[in-house]
Amino acid sequence: MEEGLPVPSIFLHAKTEGIEPMEKVDVTIIGAGIVGLACAQQIAEPGRQVLVIEKNAHFGMESSSRNSEVIHSGLYYPYQSLKHTLCMEGNQLIYSICAKKGIPYRKSGKYVVAANNAHEKDLHRLFANAKKNGIAGVSLVSGAQVRKNEPAVRCTSAMFVPSTGIVDSHQLMEYFLSDAQGKGAEVVFNVAVTGIEKAGGSGYYIWVKDADGQPFKFYSDRVVNSAGLDADDVAQMAGMDVDKESYALSYCKGSYFAASGLNISRPIYPVVEKDSVSLGIHVTPDLAARLRLGPDAEYLQSREKNYRVNQEKKESFFASVNRFLEGLDPSCLSADTAGIRPKLQKPGGPEKDFVIVDEKEKGLEGFINLIGIESPGLTASPAIAKMVKKLIA
Image (cartoon, rainbow, N blue to C red; front, side):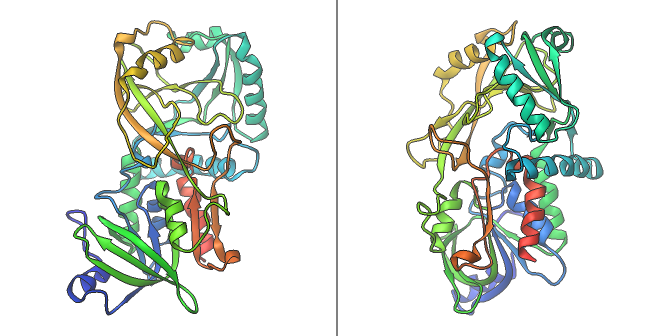
């Protein structure tokens, strides 16, 4: 349990009386990343018992806190895919939430740049997709126009996307958590789910253990699987064949390098090819004007959550951004952090959409899977939560 948070009554009973008597809740959310917390904030209401279970000691310790903190526009994704529609809705929701709640953000816009003539075709393809997806205000601009606003950037042309921005993701998660708790949701940390079983009529038995290894179980009418990197494992606990359902996740690591000596005021993205596993090594200033390069994309051979940054990647990072930046020196780069994407897309395979579904057609009514929630998961989080609320209702 995180220090300072009240202990949910269900776990007080478990501590003092062992596994019995079994307690009951209405909705259990597995995972306290940004999506799980947003779901709790949306679902919680008077008279509904909502419990959030997180295996780590704090919220958002994995993918939610290891990303670029970019508010995406929705320009990259297939038309009317969940990634497209939920990203666009979430984009507007996040700006509204931040403005109303005083959460730090900056609506800076971004440039997607064609570093040379060979990239022009892909830039125009991406621009056509942005227009098809209804991204407001996108425009093609010359390299000279880009250089006027960003003197360190060199390119033949670019697309300007005004709806892109930067957000303080930690404070956004804190808002979702505190608002959910204010509505009566209970949150527990250092508790891992170890088993899920469908009850005879409806609902689910959930087995858990705490940091001391104390096991206990409880009953939940409905379950939201928002376990991020472990979402396929949780689905498997509920009896699903994740390989048959194409729910098995691959871990795709993305590293970042910090950069100094450049003045960049907005995110600068390279053009990427269709079905690329990432948006390319881009340049992003955070809200304190600190500059980061990344992430790259490296599929891991195992499920180890290894966040070490390989210093030997410095040269490849420099070479990647040196195509569209000038004035940067390799000595100005230093290893920063890394994150891991929970990807449904396999190496060399086509892009995959989010999985957001009540598994009633598979005999698991009330078990809601959120699988493959990678980028633009942060941007889409409040919209995903609204969708889950409808499924819960």
